[in-house]
Image 1: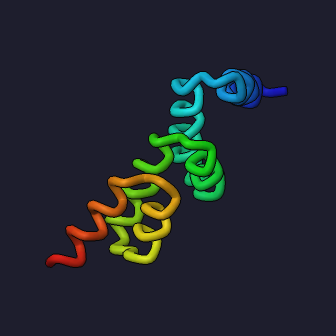
Image 2: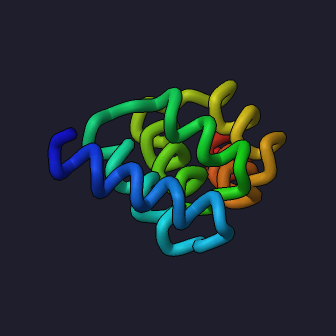
Length: 88
């Protein structure tokens, strides 16, 4: 097992035990790998950092539907960004 996998596995174990910082770190690692599916899965687990990272990507693309999806998934800032873009 590589060191990166071991670190990721350790972070996952910590996140599964309720450690929010480990969950945030998993989101950062997924973002670095551009793994949007993992970011979405982390958001579903309640990781606000994943919501933040996905929102930034959606805003940069001007993806209004994705912002609505993120807002519906519980990341309120995505709704704020959606409203801001619609108000332009």
